[in-house]
Structure formats: C-alpha cells, structure tokens
Length: 115
Image 1 (cartoon, rainbow, N blue to C red):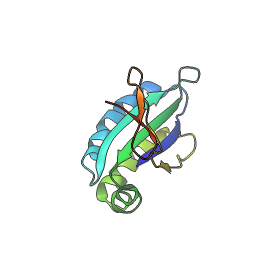
Image 2 (image 1 turned 120 degrees about the horizontal axis):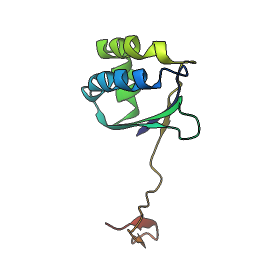
Image 3 (image 1 turned 180 degrees about the vertical axis):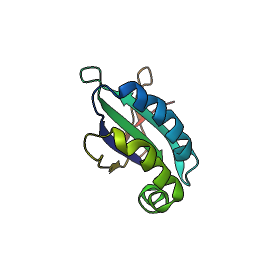
C-alpha cells in the first residue's frame, strides 16, 4: 500500500526541512509495517514536496504508526515547516510497468510486467 502526501513547506525553509526530514525518517523506518519511502522536491515549485511511503497494510500507517510515540516525535520535528497540514492518501497497486521490461500476458489474459 502506498501513502502519498503533498507537503507544502514555508518558502525559504527547504534546506532546513530536508535536514530535519532525514532525522525524522529514522523514526518512520522503525515503524511496524514500514517498507520504504521517497521524498521528492518539485522542480517548478521548490517548496512543494511529495512524500511516498510504502506500507505493508493501510492499518500499519493509519492505526499503528499514528498512535505511536514515534508519530508524536515525527510531528514535533516536522509540523513547523508546513504551510498547511498534509493530508494522507492511500493507494493500492493496479499495475506496474518499468522501462526496459516488456509487459506480458499471464494465463488469465492480464498484462503483467516481466522481470
């Protein structure tokens, strides 16, 4: 399950946010059900970031992490940077395609990625 957040940072605090996020990310990586994350900065609007977090299950984020002491520390580190409070959206995988990997049909006729 993929969690997506648009993060709008106070302009001028981007470098400090990125340094602080690196510290906060250590808390995230300890969370039950955490699998991976990626923080991306917008090229056109440098105070806009995307946070993508891969969780084993949606409940690992919405129930377990959000009530943990680590989540409180996470918020304490990062909330001061936000122009507006981020809203989480959760996404299920429908399909995956990768450059250089030819898609193929499985026995049910569904297209899947080979590799």
